[in-house]
Length: 356
Image 1 (tube, one colour):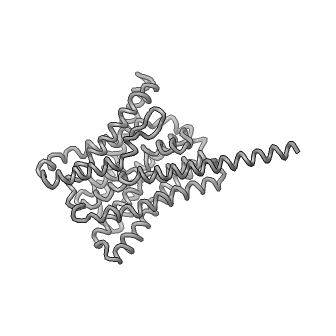
Image 2: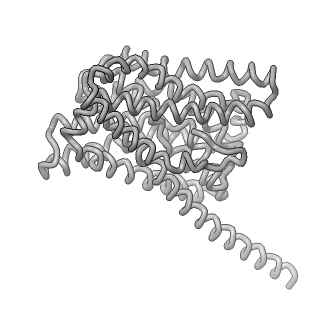
């Protein structure tokens, strides 16, 4: 996603949920009134998915992985929450809401419950590698540490994503693990490789300043346009599911919102208890909370192409992430002021004790 030179969220990104909603409406109208035209657009899906993920990879400095050796504990915390907690937490939330609450209340069919549950799991298996840097900056977190954590997550999820989908989704839906692996390599492994090559080439020929001030803003805009383009195509092809089941949006939103708030503050206060300052704690909180919805959509559209409700359910990620994350940023900044005020008070008390 795009950000300005100061690293702030642009007004375009702040309204991302609105743009996504508009593109959903356009896609639904195309699918209903111009179905033949929509079918011709299907070829654009892999292109759009690739262009959603590739720009984020150009931000990764693999050299920063060396610096991660000095932050072993912080990396360990993120690895623990992202790969030992998050997939199972969203699995549990999906079971509670889709298999128990909504199903028992008669709000959803058993088949729809399984498909929405699958979409929720897809959102949980891979951490965010793009917008998370913006949230960290807005909350005045530790930017350099954020880059290190993003680099680790980008590499680890290439290996872990197929495993977790097979473990969690394969428990109740027959899946092709090789197709999952192919999707991960195509939409995560290949963009990672090309992103690193692009970054190195541009820095060697144009310089790092040109990369940050010229290329990355352009790539950010391209990423946003690719996301919106993919939304239009997806809903023009899968829109019938939404029109027949409009309630699935709020049914997906409830566990996703609970997950965002629960996990961020769990990680934040865990880090505070372990002695980390606000900057490090908020950074780790965002890197454990943000989800790689681009990859979730890519896998849903390719590996679960015969289950359109799975693909549609994953769009809830970008639809609600912006407003929810901006709320968490606001709450974090309030905590930051309280923490720093308390720290200044303690320092004054120590000085007074010494002078006395």
